[in-house]
Each structure stands twice: as C-alpha cells, then as structure tokens.
Length: 109
Length: 277
Length: 140
Image (cartoon, rainbow over all chains, first blue to last red):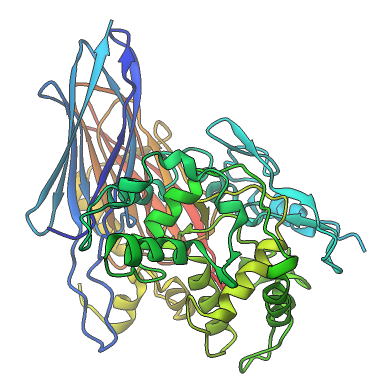
C-alpha cells in the first residue's frame, strides 16, 4: 500500500427524500505523475489513483477516470440525489492495485 | 510612515476577473472571523500595520482556507489525530495517554516558542520531549510528516487566538538574537529577511507576491509541495533562495528567529494549519 | 508520443518554472487528436456547458476547475499545454443530481483547459478556459 493514504469525505448526515446534496472528497496521495526525474536523472515511475467512484445503495453517482494531471491529494466535489436512507460507498483505485474505501451513512426523512 | 497597502490594488487588477470567494480582507474560517490585520507591536520600528500572509494570496488560494474540508491540510490533521492516539515506545503510551483531551492545548500555540528552564523551546521540542522522556520513543524529524501532522493538530486547538509570545525577562536574549538574525545579510545574494519581508512586502518577486513573512499560520499547507511545512522548513527554503547555507532545523538560530518573527505577529490570529502558495 | 527531455520536464509537479522558461511548443494538436478520438470526428458544439477556472493560477500544481454540463452523460477535461493532454473523465450515474463536478488539476504552463461533454442524445459540446500560470519567485 502506498504510504500515508487517508481518505476524507463530507456528506450531510440528514436530507429530505429527493434532495440534492453536495459531496466533497479528498484523499492524501502523492499522485506521482511519471513525468518527474529523481536526482540521478531517472524517471520516477508513475504512481497515481486512476479511478474514483461514488455509489449510493449500489447505484452509481459518479465514476471518475484520473490522469496524472490531477493534483496531489485528489479532490472532488459533486452532487447526488438520495431517494432513501442508506450508505454512500466511496472507492479509490491505486495504480499499485490497492483499493481505498470509505462509507458514509445518510438518514433520509 | 504609513504603507498604503499597494497589493490591494494589485490584487484587484490581477485577480479581479477571477472568482473571489469573499472580500479579501475578511478571513472567515467555518463561520469564525480571524484577525488578519493589526497595529504593529511597538517594538517594530519600520512597520505600522501587520498582515497575515493570507492577505497576499489570490482569491482561489484564500478560499481554500475558509472551509475545513476544502483546506487540504485537514487530511494531515486527521493523520495527526491518528498519530496522537498511537502507542509508541517502551512505555506503552500514546500522546493521548496523558493528554486525554486535545482541546486542552487551546492557548499553547500563541505562546510558542517560549523559555522553559532557561532554554527556548518550540512546539516540536515539546512533542519530542514527550516522546523521548515519557513514551520512550524515538524523536520525530523536525519537519517530517508525523511531526507536522501533530503540530497542525495542536495548533488548530488555538485557531483564532491572538499570537502572544513573551519577549521580555528570560526570553529577551533569545529575542535579541532573533532580531539580529532578521536584519543580518547572508548568502551570495547578500540579503536579510528584512530586505524582502519588511522593505518590500506587497510587491512582486517575479510572479510571487511578497508577504510580511508572518508565521501565525504555520504549519502551513503549500500548494508548491502539497504538504504541511514547518516554520523552520520555510526558513530553510528562504535561506536557500538567497544562496545562503541554511541553519539547522531545530537549532538555536532558527528558534531565536521563530521567536522574533512570532513577536512581529503579536495580535494576528493563529491560522494553523493555513494554506499558502 | 515521443518523450523528449523538455516534455518530461514540463509536467514535473514542481517544475512549473522550468516549463515556462523552456518555451514549450504548442501541444494543441495532441489535444485535438484526443478530442477527435473521443468524438469519432463528430461536430462539437459550444455554448451549453460551462467551465470555470481561474484567469490566473497562483500555482500550477493546484488549479481549481469546475465543470457544469447540463444534459451530459460524461465530461472529459483536457489541458492543451501539458505533455499528456487528458486530465480526467467524469461519468455521471443515475443518482447524480447535476452534471457538474469540481476538482484540482496540474497545469505545466499557461494554456487552455478544455471540457468536452458527451450529451444524452450522443452529440458533443465543449467549453474552453485560458489559465495563466505564473512563475514562482520564492514560491517556485
């Protein structure tokens, strides 16, 4: 696992059915672009998060493909509708095969 | 002499078309107003008004600090919470074994560095003293990720409190030494701190906007390196830029300079962890 | 793409200053190629989607970008002055409330950011924003 990777997610705890809610996500990751060289002139191999998905109760909200031009500590903000109470599942896919997950519950009244 | 804040006009021209989240004078973090401008303390002879470095940044960079989610430093504060609760060393203790409520650190950050038992200590010294003497653990690197995460977490407890370091009594000789360093020209470019941060703040150094070099926001998340930066790490960067051989992080020189710089920001709000360019 | 030393330097996260100083050739054609690959050569309209970016980025490492594309099923972002033009693709799922998203991107130099949206009817829309990336002084 890439070192020091920590996800952060902001989801409101409550909403009314059919409301639009704003979601923010951030994950600490160096997003090594594969374009840089080390002190000896060798290319530092690419090591990025290449995909991020957000789902709610098994249905997709957003599916993002990331390229090396996404900044260190990738940040996304987007909007979702929540038809019922349930769980958001956030998943980040690392080039090295690791998968980082975070879940947030929301109560819909 | 009153400096007429020339950067206000520059910002208005340069960034006027961009989306400025708020009036660039008012820093509201999570709904709480922080003081970014104050009358200079009486010991400052050449400056009338002191400004937080936040005031010198573009609207987009400023906006990052107004929301604790948008502030990328907060992911490192989260890591700091993990570090704080992690048992390490021969005594089987974590920071949290003694310091049960992190909120109890409110009020510490504005007073540092301070003199204890005749020595000038920074927050990093306090953390490492706990680690080596109480936990039986290895000290952390002064500007390493673990240290900056924890100093950001501890600093955050005092966010909004005015910087208030002691510069008299025991502290006086350290403060004098720091002041001397501030005005001493060094390096191949033969420059002192004051050449940029006192004589030329508000003007541009190439495309960068020179600040007063205030340290009330440290540790600070820099867009440049996308991580938390310690005060001493920043001093080192400045010294390299003027082609000088930097003093050691955690050494007597940087601690004295830290005290002097903190005293130049008396009255500005603690912004830890801030966001800068 | 042939990787020359100059191009490799261009996207190094910390070398915004290098990239700007080395007067990069225009990479617009790479972006055009990438867009053509996405659209299959179909016409790309303008005017219905919105791309928000700073006019001047204080630091090319972290440039906030927002895209708002009502009626889009997916949006791809390109940066025409980066060595690799593709930046990200957002695919909107059934529970997406709006066809909008924000992120933070790396720009090697002053350039255009381009958003191309694939609409629900299969047509394409685009929006462009020019972002000036400043050279660091002590920040760089």
